[in-house]
Amino acid sequence: MNQKQIDMAKSALGERTVDMLFRTHQDSMWILENLGVGCKQPDIQAAFQQFESSGEAIVYDNRIYLTGSLVENCLEKTPGLDDFFVPLNSFFIGGTAPYVYDDVAGRGGLTPTPEHVVHIAKIADSRCMVAGMGRGIKLKDEIQQMNIMDEHCAKPLYFAVTSDEALARAVEIHKKRKNIMIVFCLTRPPLEVNENFSQYFVKVVRAGLPVFISAMPMAGISAPYCYNGVLSMTHAEVLFGICAAQLLNPGVTCVHAGYPTIADPRIEYNPNYGLISHHFLNILMTHLNLMLDLPSFQSAGTTHEEHLTERAYEDARIGQALCMKYGFHMIRHPFAFLRYLIDFSFAKLEKSISIAEDVSPDDAPEVEDPVYDERGMESLQNIGLGMYMEDSLTTANLGKIFHT
Image (cartoon, rainbow, N blue to C red; front, side):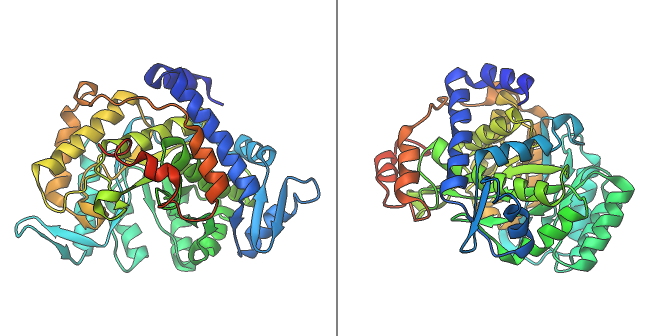
């Protein structure tokens, strides 16, 4: 535990919300012990099987169950905030849009080019409000993309590794500059390892590269429809990844990049990244992680707007202001993205960076600090690995939470 961060969280959120976050952590360990995580990757299975004799883990029918004591032991091995290379309150150009938005024509769908990546990297390197960058957009050649990022941006970077050649290049870059993270969405709902990435997760961790572990359960679809419900599911998935990493290579740097999302019934239960409650939910995730002394990377400042509207920029301002009011570690998506993070807009990038330079905590809207909802755990116990659209908690809460 990080007592300084606990005190800061109590000051920002209040005692009852901090208590809710600690209970969320306990709920996450219940999830890992009772629901487990589906996993077929043999190296990850073997890492947990060595703890079967002590009763701290069970691997059964391609599902891994682990106890709270094993989770705590792994967290103790994970390097904390004082050992991490990115300071608190850092906005990144992050995400991976498949398309570039045509700011002149007012439509999306342009194919990303290496020149686009160079432009993003130069902006990230030159603007003070930008602490570092992820890919922003996706090139087909991941080695070319990491080389461009390395060449044009000296600030911290994160990117993907999905081949042996990319891993070798990432090792070279890390040896030279250290301040990189390799991003993995290791799990997919409900509580299943994404086997498309698991092999390279193992290789990257064994190579000693810092890993950025993301997970995206959605309240009302794959997680209970309340703050502590979706936080506990998100946290459980990332904790599994952290534990796997520490068992494979004790002491490797792990970034908790849990990214809780919200299904909005008004848009056919699709995620709505422009909700005030989306920004705040991710800030709550951040505070739980910081109290556990974990480097933390969440999402805020995003929008549900498809085009460059005033609402799109207001969403950025609100999200950034909430981050400044409550405090955070690292935030991705606060600048350039449009609806569903599909299009990357350079005009929005520039203007949202300018907004961040002027925004203050006073610009944040009032948000009611949530308390623990007992129904979240009841939903987990009743629905488990099922879908939560028709869960009684979801239907009871429609229009009451998450609709801001």
